[in-house]
Image (spheres, rainbow, N blue to C red):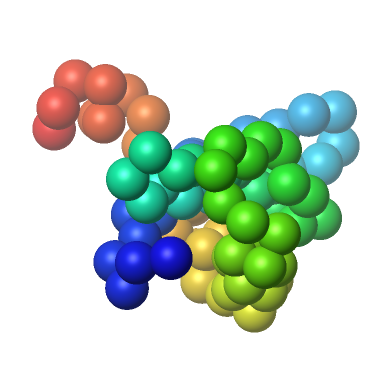
Length: 82
């Protein structure tokens, strides 16, 4: 795994009574998506089991700050490029 992995965070989404945030990681051709708050692996292409464990641990440990980032995301502004 490279020292520089690209991480993207979705805005807050709702399903029934729960809130969710999706965290995407990209390292060259490898990509993975993890759903919060359950730290569930949604998809993985190319990361090893050990790398996924590291990414999942990171997301779990940084969950509060990731949720704060997600709260500040405005999808319309992002869509319109503002």
